[in-house]
Length: 363
Image (tube, rainbow, N blue to C red; front, side, top):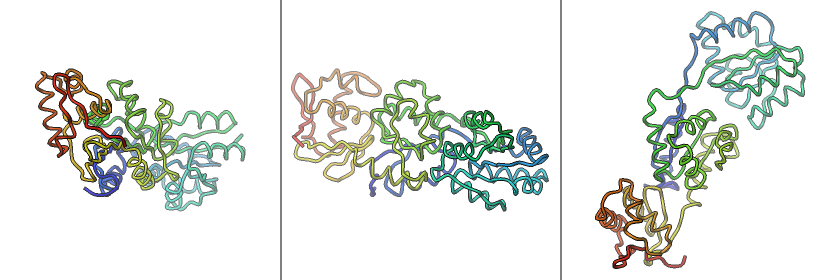
């Protein structure tokens, strides 16, 4: 394994474009655990979308807000299937068209429309401020939703006097199979994940909601795991839970991966043990630059010894750290496997009748 993320284990919660994100991470050397937190349910035959579209084309619309490219394209594709595409285009071509970002702008242009303005921040907040400054009282405003309701956005426009038509082009739902997500969450809590990535706010909310032990997950994400979001909107539910989130300057998957590849190695714990340089990963270590995988039980022992910073750790404390517990001989087995994995037995010292310690040196 080579690359700046070699040896690191990265959790991916994305459903849409997950393959692209995973490929980018693997090209930088990471091992990836994928647990999609959501699934997208398109609504081409949904009665609600059909009714909203008929309502929209029945009378002129003054402003249309396009929040996502996939949603805006899906809306026109559904209208095509209902024989409403031409009427929808006519209803929107005279309106002020406001895409939230470059991708939504591309979808607007692909539909044969021209945007009026788009926020540089790609945020709903800046879009809302623009609408309020231009004045929406008495105007009919169509808001294309992006998987979930936007109550603050819609209610603020309504309070300012707008007639708001909500366009629910798709919705987020829990994954059909929760198994992969639950396994990813378990791995995070067990200390087997170095970083966790998010590409949408609903996915972040879903992970926090799905965790069997919410407090344990939040504690790990605050303290032990680098949490990376593609942008401020995505980070919202995490920040609200007190979880620090690293974000790229541009809300793009490629930018997020580049930021992760810079940030994660810089945070790696580095130790000097028995004249060897050791760098920690969630499921591996670097010994003098050589990547050496470590199984869960010996890794749990190693993390406990590292936390002691060279002090002696008793067999009972090491036994308590093992994922599956067991008898005292399980500690001896784990120590033996750890010494083998490290490739340098003298890094772990036996202290007769007391336990074990790392042969640490000042860094």
